Structure formats: C-alpha cells, structure tokens
Length: 441
Image (cartoon, rainbow, N blue to C red; front, side, top):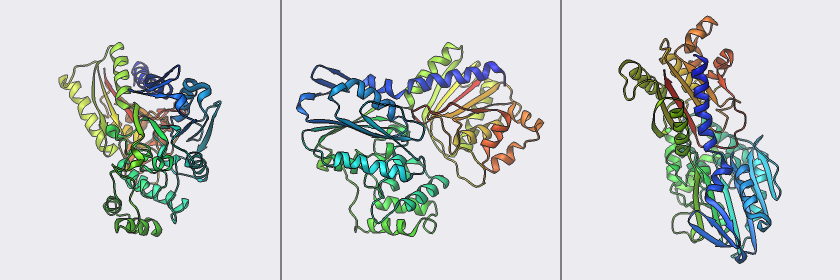
C-alpha cells in the first residue's frame, strides 16, 4: 500500500473521530443562561433544585463530565463517573473512578455501589444529570443477589466469545443487574433525571446503550433464556446464573422496569452523538481529498469475516466497472461486527475484518481499507484496528507469514503487529462503534 493511501485513510478516520468528541457533543446540546439550563428542546429552572448531581459510566464520559462541570459551574453539587482504565481526566467536583472493561471487575463493583449510594437518597427537589456512553454496561456492575461478580464475569466472557450481538449480551446483563435496564432510574426516583447519551449501538436503541440504566426495558427473562439456548450456553454458564434467569422467566423474580412505570415520568433521555455523525464528517474529509464518496450504512453488523467479503466485492466492482461509484472512490461504513472465536489467538473484530479483507483482495493493489474502533481499542488489544491493501498478503508471504493460518487461529493482532499495520490511537475517550473506510485509487 502506498503511503498516500495510508495517510488518506488515517485522515478520513480521524475526521470521523473528531466528530465523536464527547465534550463537543455535550456542548452542542447543553447550555445555561442565567437561571435556566437548556438541554435539547427542554429547559430547567436551576433555582428550583436543592441539589444537582452528576453521574455516569462509559469510555467517553470523562469529557462529557468536563463539559457539564464547565456549563453548570458552582451549581453542581457533586459528581461520580466511572470510566475504563486509562480514560480518566482530572476534574474539579466529579470523582472519576476507573474500572475494568469489557469484563467487569472489583473496582467497577465498588465504584457502582458508590454511585448508587449517591443517588439512593435523592428527593423530588434534586436534579440528576447522567452521562452514558459505550462501555457503560461493563463499567456499571451491580449483580442482583445471589449472583456475584465472578459469575457475572464468566457470563460476560462466554457471551463475548460465542458471537452474541450487543443487544443479546445486554439483555442478559440487564436481568442480572441492580443498575441496568431502568433500575438506575428507579433508584433515583423521585428526582428529576436527565440522561445524555453517546450511542455505540446499531440503530441508537436507548434501551441497549450501556444497557439502558434510565430507560424502560423491552427485553424479558424469557428472551434471556432463548439467547442462552440459541448459543448453546445452557451447560456452560455458571449454574447460578441459569437458575436465576429460569426463576425470572417463571415469574418468581420481578421483571426489569417497563414502559408505564412511574419512575420514568420525570426522565428525559437525549442522544448527543452517534456513528452517523462521525461518518458524515469522514465523508466531508474524503471529498476534500478528492474521492468520490458514499456512505453505505451506519448499521452494519454480523460476522466480521462475512462483512469483509462484501466490502471486497464492492472494491473489485469499482475497479472493474466503476460501480456503485467511479474511482478514485471512498466507501464508508459504520456499525459493529462480531467474531465467533474458534482459535486461541489474539485480535478484535476490526483486525479480523481487515485480515479477511486482505485475503479477499490479495493482488488487487488499487484497493485499501481501514477498519477501527472509535474507542481506540479492538478486542483485548491496544490497537484500534488495522490498515490493509491488496498488497498486504504478498508482504506477509515475503515475511514467511501465512494469512489464512492467522485468520483460522483468530490471531489477527499478531499478524498485523509483525507487518507493522496496526492502527494505534491510544485512548480516544469516545465510543460510537466502528468506522470502516475503503478507498480505490
């Protein structure tokens, strides 16, 4: 791959990343003037509240909290926000607590209990402003007794490995939790509650982002049992988890809060940023670089390897027939694919997609692709993703690397590390799913 192609892909990606900046996202939707706080199309009289509390969880919530601190100034009473390790920033009134992701840990458990204790005594004259972003599910663990943290950890690990979608994973998370699936809103009631959300899920479903702590839950215990059976996890999940969900499906345990629950009468949820906004900014950058550009979708999901075949087919069609657009072309896609782990290697969905794509376009030197997570991490690695082209497999063979063997072992990270093709951004402190950018020169 030529240096110009690689630079172009990185510039296009970073334009999308900039548009997902959480602090800017909050400032676009929240402002104060005198005694009024304006959030979206609603306004709140600040003097009518005895206390104003800030809480949150997610990879992008530290910058969101910074923006809210600046806007509220001395009116903010206190704040409690949980972020992934390495994603914290110093703030004035907000306690930034770091914890484990994507597997919840003891630090997350302690931080969640502190956050819940902060809002448990809220009254009618309190205003609670929440900030949630991707990662909030893992960072806000509060297992429902008798479920414990180790059972929750094993459950999360198995769900991530089996290829379940984020909607399916979060449905089960919500039914094992005292904080997700609307339970946080129940805890804060009767306070006025406003939630600002940075979306990291397909279709921006409010009940799925961070497992919907302040949103009525549409899923049920019966849905959870169906998910477990679909992925053949009945005999693999901890017995206590299966028994708990079975009791819920039998009506023995209370369901998560649903539409019509009084706890949601004083709740306002607002999306302040999403993947589509990032793709639009990336498209503008691509056009400025001289590419004929099209956004195919911000809602791509499914197996990473299968998605790679689709993108490869589009790239070849552009090369041969100038369809659906003519070269120089840029195809932009957003969403979140999944990986069913069969090997013992190390990687993530973006690196797996990039490796499968490189194999599919082997020899098509005009085609290049970047696939990366906007949060700066891809699976259990420190890479956001990878950049490949039709020349990648040829370079690998020269280095005595077998691309197909690495793909079979789910070892994309080792493959790209050897070639120097990983995209390393460090913590971006945002998360609006993934951006896939393909260029044909």
